[in-house]
Length: 120
Length: 108
Picture 1 (cartoon, one colour):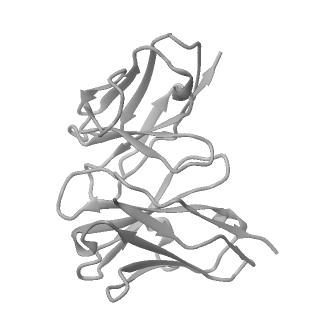
Picture 2 (tube, rainbow over the protein chains, first blue to last red):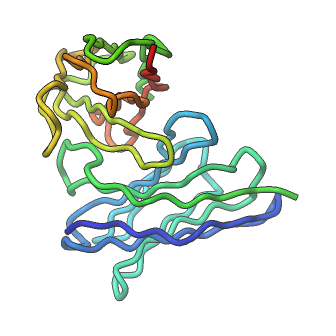
């Protein structure tokens, strides 16, 4: 069955970086974009960006340009999302989710979420 | 960026009642509109895609309608497990798949 398993919770200090992993299984890794969505406590869903696991190209929301990097490791079928220059406003649950390549389709499977807490 | 606006922010209803949730896009998204349900402590779950197609395993009491810029999610007879937060999302403008701010469906 399809699963997206994310790494565990993180606590970071302001100004630091965090790197969260997402390991899909149950389907062909290179056939689906991986998107990242975050949710601040008590707030709505915010799209952050996506990566194409096939070629490694990524696209980011404007607000994260310059401090968000998405990468993939095809040898382990793992996606990484790294966010730098953290502030308290980055405290949120971070989710990875998937979309089939080159289609108009929404997010059908989601990871369990990774809580990132930014606190001094 | 396409802005998605949901109304109302909160909907207070009783089990057995019919619920209607609205979503409006700042420009046409054709039928590239999805609805998600999110329960506390869980990731969102896909309910409806292509504006009106139920995802696998979604009960028939959930239905979606609309096209262009105005969409509706209807729950025909509310069950206790339906009280949650609902989000609409456009996936028309790749790659920025924006969400509405959510509608909280609470028990009256």
